[in-house]
Structure formats: C-alpha cells, structure tokens
Length: 435
Image (cartoon, rainbow, N blue to C red):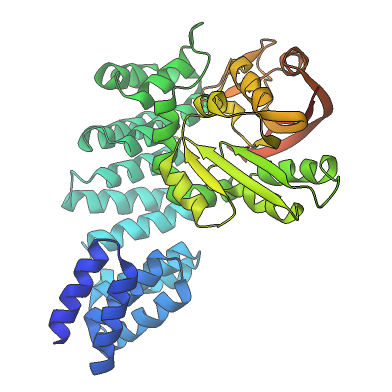
C-alpha cells in the first residue's frame, strides 16, 4: 500500500498539488514512520515552501534511514545553502563527493556556495568539473559565466552566458540573464567592450522582446520612448517567484517611501472610504505598507504580469487585482480614486505624458498621486535610456509635466531608492494633488 500511496504522492507533487501530496506521504508514515520516499517527499514540499525547519526535520529522518543515500544529503545541503548556512551545507556535500567525486548536483551546489562566498576560482573549478559530465547543461554554462565575470574574465563570461542562451533554445530566462550580464560588464568596461557579443545575440534573436529592449537601451533612437508591454510582462513573469528576495538584496525602499508620504499627506478623516489604486502593483509590496494606514480603504491593483498578481493575491490586501496594461487600464476607468501610487513603475516609461494623463483622469478632485522616479544623472534631457533597460528622468521635465497635466506639487523629495552594483541609485518620491 505504501508504494501505491508514494506513487500517488509523486503524481500530485509533480503537478504542483503539494497539499494532497503531503497528505498522502503522511498516510504512508502512519504505517511506516521511517519510509524513506515519504520522508524525502515531505522534505521537498516544505523546502519549496521555504519552511526550512520542517524540511530539515524530514530530511534528517530520511538520512537516518539511509545514511549513505546522496539524495537526503544533497537536500540537506540545499537547505543550508538557501538559508545561508554555507558551512553546514559543505559538510553534507563533502560526504557526497567523497563517495562520488563526479556527482553533478553536488558539484553545482558546491560551486554556487563558492560563488556566494566570493571564492570565484573554486566556483569556476567546480562548475567546470560538473560540465565534463554534462557539457550541454544550460544552467551550468550560465553559472560558469557568472563566476568568470566575478573573476573579471569578461569575454569568456559572455561566451558562457551566450552559450546558455543557445543551448536553451532562446529561453526568456536565459535571455534576461545574458542581458543583465551585458549591462553589468558594459557598466564596468564600456559599451564597446560587449559590442560583438551584443550584435551576435541581436542577429540571432532580434525578434525576442528582451533582445529588442536591450538593443534599444544600448543603441536608443527617437522612437524608444517606452518599454514594450510584452517585454515588461515577460520580465516580471520570469522573476515573480523570486522577485521580493531579489529586491531585498538591492536594499529596495520605494514602497516604504511611498507609504511614508501617504501617511503624511493623506492624514484626513480616518473614517473616509479611501479608494486607492496601486498602479503597477507587482507582488503587492505597496499594498502591504498602505493597508495599515487607512482604517477604511479599498485597494485596487493592476499589473501586466499575471505571475506577479498571483503573488499579490496571496497577501489578501486588494479588493480587486486586474491583469492589464497600465495605460489601457487607466483609459478605461472612470474618475473614482482618492489616491494613486506608482512605486518604481515610471522607470519603464520615458515619455510620461500618457501615464500622467491617465492618472489625472481616474483621480477624484483633490486626489493624491505619489510616485517614485529614478534620477537622470547622465545628461540634461527629459529622460535617459539606461543600459539596464530602464528609463531615468530629469527633475525639470518632471516638474513641468506635473504642472502641464493639472497637478500641484506637494512634495519633491530626493531619496536613495535602492542599491545596484554596489552603488546608491538616487531618485525622487513625488507627491502631487490634482487641481
């Protein structure tokens, strides 16, 4: 019976129904508390849910049942890696590699730990060892590229990242990884240094939205005034699951800064029924900070990425979440909102006229509009297309646009919005009132 239940649990696990999978594994353990397959399955489920304590509990029980089985040892190492306990992870990896020095999974994880610890030569060595066994592994080439980049072996790094794109058949996640590699290396060595790799990539995959966006960022023309919706959708669909952890690593503050301004400028009658639009709501980070500020509120969210909206829905903060292009949504909505917020959204628009017109249209008289914008420190233009694919704006342009679109400026506050490449990224938190 245990075998049948384990097989059923495996089917549910592979289909992403972890609740049913866990229930079946627990049934197995009622009959045999040391069933290895059920223990590992439960460990895997809790690992995916980032419940590392419970994952460790089941992985350790599995290890006691089969001390020499590498699966539980590698899983224990993965928990150690993801929770930042690198020394613990190494203990388990050494046990695996002593028995099988070619174990691909252990070598990859060992390389990732070395990369995280700044041991770049050791990381390259580990990834190369793994590649001998699986020379066509897409992610191994990507990991090796990152390690080589850290060693300042930039040409070889780009070779490996582009190889990952090709082996993946042009998968969006590899295009994004290569685009970010191009940007980081160009930021350090100049655009000319990466030009041959960029042109080869563009020639092969010119129809891809990520490739087009990156090409436009490196070689902008007068028609590059906004990011294509298809690019934005793909970007955030790919990163949705790990989006918030990535922002944590960037010391990202935009949602808190927006909420601070809302707390100060929207401090009227607490009994008022606030209707709030989180424009480009993403995973709901602004909603998380706005919800406690208003006793009576209705928060609406709109975003291009369905995957980001799935993350936002889990927070149970929004009355309604809509999957739509922001400009299209604003044009179709009646005048109904008391507050509109845009945290780190303007960075995907160069020309802001249509966006400001749309926000003005949906705001009630006297309504508040709070947004963040990254500062253009490169030239005196209205906006600047940065190598990262994001737009930076000039203060003069923003101030004149606010007035032209029917807003009064309540506050224009310069802040550090995040860190990137070890540098502070400056911008503004702007608070407007509709005239």
